[in-house]
Image 1 (cartoon, rainbow over the protein chains, first blue to last red):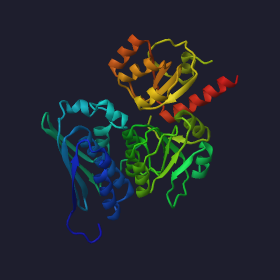
Image 2: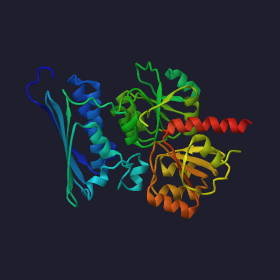
Image 3: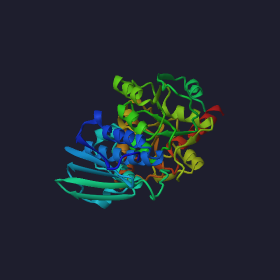
Image 4: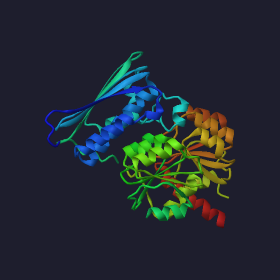
Length: 152
Length: 117
Length: 115
């Protein structure tokens, strides 16, 4: 973590449907983590989780924010959106379940892997959703003492 | 398998070449669904896809995939090329269909990205 | 020419919906994009994909696809199987990844065409 005493933070506005810029926040997070000397595997897990979360907002919501905070212990990422919300979270967590429209699938997304992928790469995972209002997702990836997920 | 050998085998064109591009490709991920790449691909693999969207490059960058092959001679647009240049991803194009590409690479002993079955 | 049945047997595919499994297979098309399959697949090809939703059947029926193989251990949705039965489309599943299945199938079809 170099000489940084306080947490390193960043915040990004996400626009629904803005495919051209989708992933910008996650790419930046990845660069920040790499520059901080975070191990490659952990950086990759954080970037993948952030990217899936970012895509969810772009695919489903009107708008949202992605905020991250890096401390010596962990990478914390929270994503809040104004979107349709999730009726049945348990169902949405199932691999292969998707409510994405056909055009999204033709863009290479919406195969129902997003949320399961986020949970798999995160050490803590918390999701709250109000149908008709939006969804909040909070995850942590531990920098020390966490499991070393192999992403296999 | 060296990148040059892959290009030769597939009769491919190098659209964007990463500067320090000395690769030894041992495994391949074949899919058009980007979450599938994020879920199953491991660092350093080759991605074969029929999707010609800039998002493919973004996904490759996030998942540490150094080489992307776009099949069936699909038109690779300016945005995708610019993103590959910016993110240092090697981008190849081949006129062969996905089936033939997979068949040829598999016959050369390349492995699948999924080993968790 | 190999039939769907031959291929299912040789590759250990799980038959989930049984259309005309004695149809000959001329080749194979791999894609997860329905528009791509609509544009580029040919009659009597097998289609390898990881998509599981009912529109897969619609595309297969329109394009005269011999059979669909869903890879990576994924299971077709219930509606997909219902629709497949109605449209007489064969749906099979495999635990193999798309890449491995394609590799095995490529070899199989190549050898069959040489003989």
